[in-house]
Each structure stands twice: as C-alpha cells, then as structure tokens.
Length: 284
Image (cartoon, rainbow, N blue to C red; front, side, top):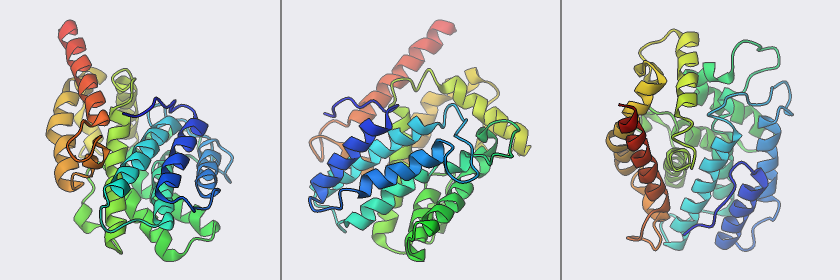
C-alpha cells in the first residue's frame, strides 16, 4: 500500500504529490507542483497580503495536506485505470490548487482579532472560493480556470448541493467530486482523528456562537461527547452514502489493486471508528 508520509511536513507531502504528478505526466513542468505548494504555504503561514496565519486547530494546514495527498493518490489511481475523460497537466494543477486553497476561508485579516477562524465555519466554503479567485487572478489564471477552481471548492461543503454547481465541463465535475472525496477521507483516516474530535467540536461551538444560526450542521452537537457518540453513524450513514452516491464512488481509484483491492483509507477509517467505539464503551 502507501508508504508513510508525515502530513505535518509540507515538504514531505509536496514530494509525494510531485512523484504522483510525474508518474501521470512525465514531461510536466517541474515547478508546477512546488509553485502551487509555495503559494499555499505563504497563505496559511501568514505571509500573504493582509492575512494572519491559520489559527484553527482542527482545520489547520495539516488538514489541507491530508486532503491534498489523498487527492493526488486518487487522481494517480484514476489515471492508471485509464478512466475517461483523461486529465491534462493543467487540469491536475487546477485540482491541486483547489484542494490546497479549499479551507482558506478560515483565514482572518490582520485586523480581525476576535476568536479564531473557526467562527467562519458556516461560510468558509464561500470565503475560500472568494480567496482562491483573488489569489489566482493575481497569478494570471484565466477566468474560466478560476471558476473551475471555485466550483471544485464548492464540492467540499458538508451540505453542498452538487446539482446546483455550474460545472463548465465533465472533467471539472470529476475533479470536484474527487476533491470532496479526498477532503473527507484524508481527515477521517488520520492517525489522530479520534483524538482531535473534541477540537472539531470546539470549532463548531465557536461557529454557532458567532453565526447564531442553529439550523446549520455545526449546531446539531451539544458537546464534544455528543459529537463523538454520533461520529460512527456520521461515517456509516452520511459519509459512506455521500462517497458512493454524490461523489460517484471515485474512492475506488484508491483501491490497490484497482478495482477490487483493499482501500487503505477505508481501512484506516474503519480502524478509527472501531477505536472510537471501544473508547465510548469504556466511558459508558
């Protein structure tokens, strides 16, 4: 299966993504992946214009790197399977930028001193799309390319209505569904996923306190313990359904060997859910 990658280390993830990209596109510009990562590191590190460094503890830069690594692996698996339509290097770059920028909506301006970026949880997808447009316009991307990245980012909302996203092409839609898949699998397969659930609840609680909107997904949990109790069902009744139905079963491209081999991400998530169940049982 996959070799261990330190997802706290941007360079380690970048090297894996670069290797995947070169496997798909041997003649690709060698600076394409490093440049994309450099832009993201600048943004999340507090070195882009008037933005602070990311201060959310669950949706931190490692969270972004976990999704990025998963996306690169999925697209590499899809390429190896000969799926249609094929991606070009430019399509790969746009998908990569979309996953790298999909949580920039949590970033705060330097003058924004109240709370953490988690207060923007309810609106972070829209904010991320706006941030991406600003950055990519500055970097010289075409309007249709910027719109493609924004549409892909829109797929990551928990309650995203995919049929309402104005995809411009079939490949763009596939990239968006792949991004949504990778965002979920990357975080839930993390070794410390169970340990970080109380931190995720704290972000949700801050978002509810800031938005005052109790109709949102983030408001359905009354405590960290409640969120943890509901997480196994979230995986089995919501995420699995979303992956298969809404995201078109693209997770199969992570199966090794394709199409019927084991899925490393699913195995890691199932192990996390089983660990969580044991933890909950012991506390009962």
